Length: 91
Image (cartoon, rainbow, N blue to C red; front, side, top):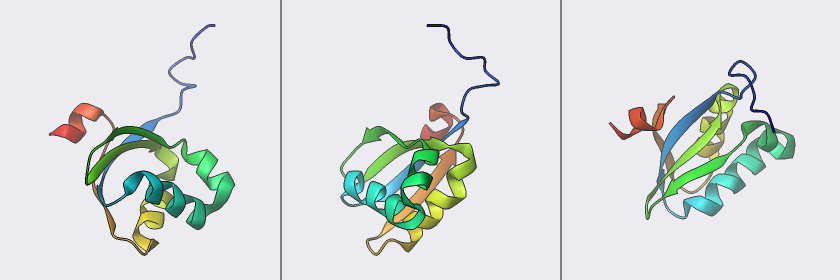
């Protein structure tokens, strides 16, 4: 299968999120706030999950919606950093 041109690819942003029980809470928060269609537009992917933090990748256009959905969720979750690359997120 032929790969996509760079101009056709989805632009990703990486978020460092801190909180508890993130694997379940992030998905539930996004689904509850922006619904099924919005969840599919985010292109959510989990890169790394640690005890109290996780790195997720999302679509560039949906960064504001995802941040808002994490802020409104009753359990505390905070977006520490947003970056265009994983290397920039680690610094």
